[in-house]
Length: 187
Image (tube, rainbow, N blue to C red; front, side, top):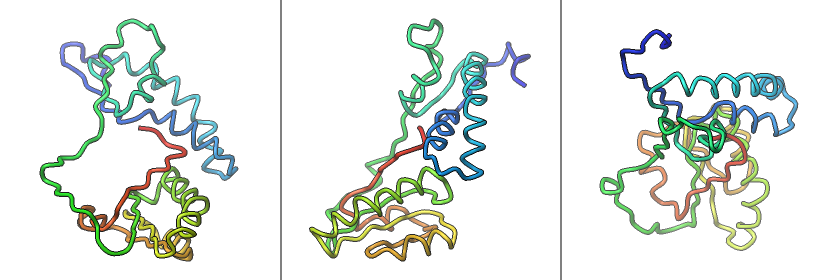
């Protein structure tokens, strides 16, 4: 649609490279229908994304990893592809040391494969080691989650799934650390 808009500045806010996400999800080797589709779509999306970034005056991504994935090193005329990281207004979010139980928090939409893979890994591989040392340690998953995810994760000792919350700040307020074991995905 934008090819005929040479007289109007054009901006593509990509956030991340979908093709990189597809490639990483396909590498999980779960062999489900969804992962099979990612295997098929990854190279097609990659070719499309790499060519599309040159159709815009400005392209916005959130990480250098995604930019490097889409742009060849030494390629000319790539200064229009910028990295604008995610952030938070720290002045409006006060921090205080948590009191009570040693809680850890993961924040994310649990309908996505990459967030599920992250929580699967943490719950299976890391949380048991933490709970060997600190038996009362808990892992709170904050974010939208279908009922099947609640059931799957809450069957594990020390795991709580909040589902959708009105305030992430309040829901994560008693956590002493955030967990981000991102094994797939991008951005």
